[in-house]
Amino acid sequence: MTGSLGYKSHLSGPSDLVTTHDEYRAGFLSLALEKNTRATPFIKEAKSLRQAVLKTKSPRDLLKMDSIQYAFLKAAGVSDKAESYLTDEDKKNAKIHLIEKFLEPAGPSFVDELVYRFLLTQGDALGGIMRNLGGEWSKIKFLDMMRATLYNAGANYEILLRDNKEWQRNSRGSVPSEEIKALRWVNPSNNKTFRTLIVDYKVRIVNKNVDACLFKDTRDNLKDDFYQDPSNFISLGELKGGTDPAGADEHWKTGNTALQRIRDAFSRVSMKPSTFFVGAAIENAMASEIWDQLNRNILSNAANLTKEAHLEAICLWILSL
Image (cartoon, rainbow, N blue to C red; front, side, top):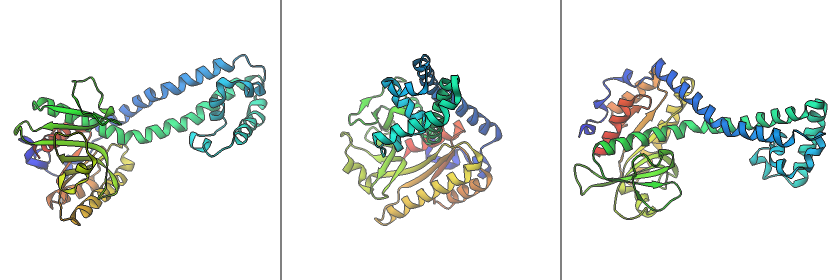
């Protein structure tokens, strides 16, 4: 198989790993578009809030409207996490503080003031979603390419949805990759070889979640004991989807530390599964470090997430293991 060439099938030196200006630009544009999409529910909620309170005569009337109390609390600056620590009296006091300090001083414009403050606090929630999106985006892109590679190779594969214990046959294009926890397939070049790929899986021997784990497989349903047996691991990988070059070095340091932790844990039980790294933001210095690890057989493979040829190559390599 083409993938059996490993990293040399798509890399000839550290410069091949580096994210270009155009690739960073495309990444930022993609995230900007996604941010607009993710913001849509917040905008709709703000519009609904405005319509609901538009005819109220004074800010204190808001306290009597059961239908807007959750949004009112958000506008008062109380997050979902903070809310779980507050009593009903605490929540009421937060709303009264908002009324006295900001809504009443706004006069006839108190409705707009309420909506602006609701949007401001929900902006924090959106920011949290976007900060988590890098990790999700990397897994989605990786699974998208893995599924395409399996399809093109004629591999018969199944999918496991998140929070589900039953495998189902892949229905081409009907299930988005963000809903998928695992893939399993019959090796197209050897119909007696089975493999499972699980994303974001807590590996007991490491005591941490690992972004991508490739296993030997049986045709049984997902059994945790089987997938926690160190002898059944074939390869483990870290996926970093952040596209900001300012954070590139930190992503590599975090990923590299995680990979070394994996290698150390498995070496203690005399096991040595392969390891790989896939990142979206790769700068010159870290590219040199990655290349050095590849040449020293510390890392087994690496790819730049923004380069389609890299993703295809690493998926072919996984298919060949």
